[in-house]
Length: 224
Image (tube, rainbow, N blue to C red; front, top):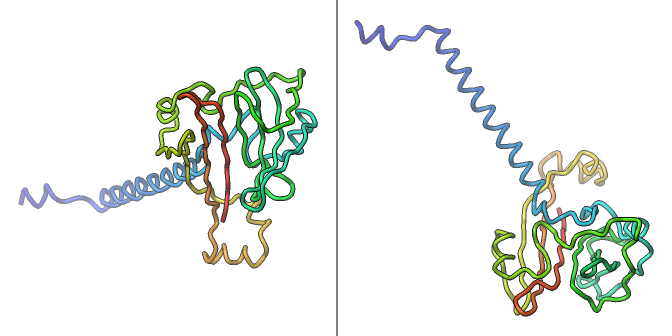
């Protein structure tokens, strides 16, 4: 008899237990979604902003308007196409890039810096604005390969004097981005026949000389 009494739980107690379990499960799911979204938004995040400019958020024309009319230099064709503007700063040069995937409006797809460059001409950074420190996400001129690998924290592929590191992830489409899609594509997104996120890749290319970083370039691409 005692065993029966000891194992008995009133109906309201069982309901409370079920409610707590459901609530805990719900909190877990919400936390997982929030964390997943945050991680997607932060793919290589500390490497996507330099000198006040965010990759994908402005165009080369915006940069020229802000920093001065540096000449746009275009090189390569198709997948090798690159347009860039260059500015001299204390200790080196800062360069801003747009590739083929960045469209005819030359959205900012990449940036970087170097001790010196053959990519000319470069113009002086405007005296009215504070020149940026040549450092992005802890990466700076003069650092060693070992320091570079430690800071990026992902697999690094070496080809001669160049080191390559990539960050890959996904970013959910924002409402305004979905609305810009063709109507038929919006319908496919709603039915699940078309993905509702961007595949994001942030690529870092570091060039070393005598064991020290002499040039850094960072690119960001978003594709569906």
